[in-house]
Image (cartoon, rainbow, N blue to C red; front, side, top):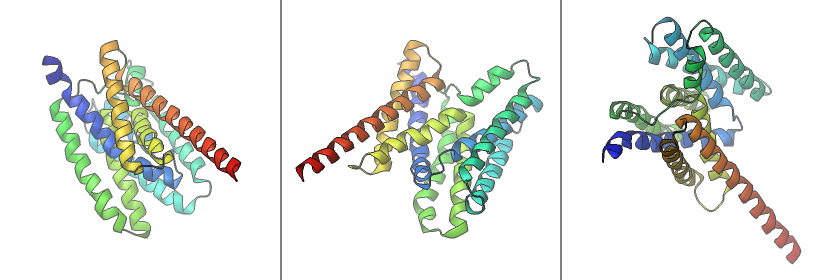
Length: 259
């Protein structure tokens, strides 16, 4: 019972992270701007690094949000005005990660902080932290389900990227940049490659099962939680994608042979 009382916020947060990130992940893959979330997350983490390095952790959320929204607006503009936008986004990611390393270079705990920014430990998340995340993710999901589909043009682009920035601001602080990237892409990718079910619903189920297994393995095997989530979720997605493609190729060969 003590274990359940201790770990239930982490498992609920894990499901919540899959829920909100898959919404954006499906759209990101369809848009073909895969590294958008990684770049926004990395730039957002610069705000966290500045807070930790120079302000003793103060103003962490406002700084993270400021950097995330700046990156989101810049990418929204670039998607309409810059050719080869994936290269632009990749360079933005490189700028973010190098900025973090420079900010943390003089810190005695620089590498430890960098590791935390990349993949944090959510296993012992408190119920208070969970409620804060719910208060952020719930209105964002409502916007994405009801307001976003009715928007058009530049407003729709800005709405998408600003909502993504708000999501990443919270998620990077809770889980880390690489975990955010894995949860945005892996479940959504699995959902899109299969054709039987709604991609979003399938991604939710696929991602939830993967992340629960990752948390269970992390706790019982005493492994780093963030990297366990990345490894298991990404591995499961890759195996499933390969299986689906082999299955599709086999069905196509049968159809050609029957002609």
